[in-house]
Image (tube, rainbow, N blue to C red):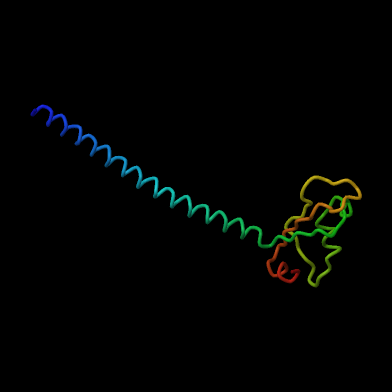
Length: 119
């Protein structure tokens, strides 16, 4: 009988130790989950900030801009002072001539004030 009680006590002690280990792991997982949520929020914020000066233009037919999209936009979008672009390009695959909707042009302006002026 005493050996049974001693066996049960050692099993209970082992279970308590395993439970403490699992609780510690659970706390670690919860902390990492919170860190992951914070990092995802920061990534979303950084992506939004990097796109804040982008404009999307749907009105220009394909191949109208030639090989230099920035120069084309500078000549078509006339403002004083002239718009300054970091980069500009077409998005998507080239569509056949006569397609209903041309691929949009995405342009990133150098200055946020110019983006606000354009919109």
